[in-house]
Image 1 (cartoon, one colour):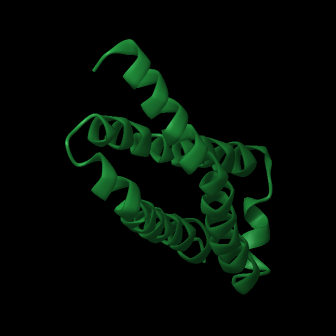
Image 2 (cartoon, rainbow, N blue to C red):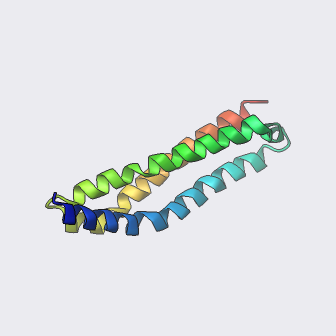
Length: 116
């Protein structure tokens, strides 16, 4: 991959993935807020410094995991499958969002429901 090609692929990846990061974070936030609300008043015990810092760490880790899409995207753009990839990379977003949603649900169950 030459430097000009890499720059083009990286720019295309940023243009595609960054607007979707908002949707990704909104979906995960909706899951957390839903489980928090469903488990009130028990879940209120999570509202302390340690709980909020733990949630912050999970948010950063979720966004770091989102960045894994860039590695795949730029690599495949440099292959002979670029045109096909540009049409179907939404599948990677959908699968990644589904996986992250399952993980978010799991952590919510662990944090808000098991602490009975």
